[in-house]
Image 1 (cartoon, rainbow, N blue to C red):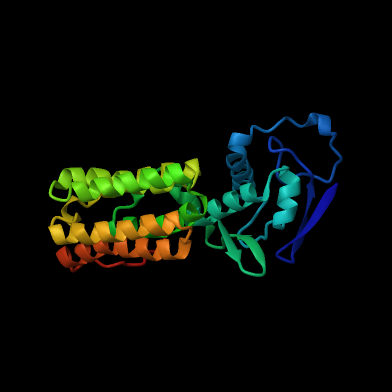
Image 2: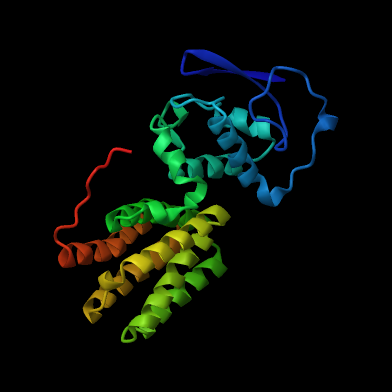
Length: 274
């Protein structure tokens, strides 16, 4: 069965019901179901994302173009609603897509800088400014805890709580404190159940750790504040309160931003032409 979707009111793309191993955007030609291969369920989200990205990078989807509706994508890919939402939300987080309430999901208008960074932030070397790194982390991690609040099971919560407790137990040992702080943030990312988000968090946090050694919470009172906000995050995630968890995460990350501004008062965010 073919679907017709109006793209930006300028043109039409025709969609055929397809399996994940096929092309996302294909001609309205009937294809026998026997040509489809069974999809490995554990990688459905990645396969959906891959095909959407291929359509963007090949030019079949242009900046400003609208994607098919959520229901159409479900039928086209033969996957569940949660898989489609995870794929589109991750691509939105990466900057490839933009969701507009009441209108739908669109390809980002400002796509070239996003594509230049590389999918999944594979090359973070371009982030030469400490503020750039912190901004990326804030955007990603505040969304991470929102997802964690809706997906974390008891085992995930226990893992997050353990890392938080180890931070508290090692307040006076800066190196151990930093180690367990890293474990805390990675445990949150792991609880989303999204492997791509987990890998992104590992890369970003590792990069930031390498860049801002001198901005770490050296004073005990700063570590105490970090632990307090971390404990709030644990509680909100455990109770499924995503927005409160995101606000607490912002407070948690603001401790680092404040320290950067205190030690390097001349550092400021300068918008660069990309």
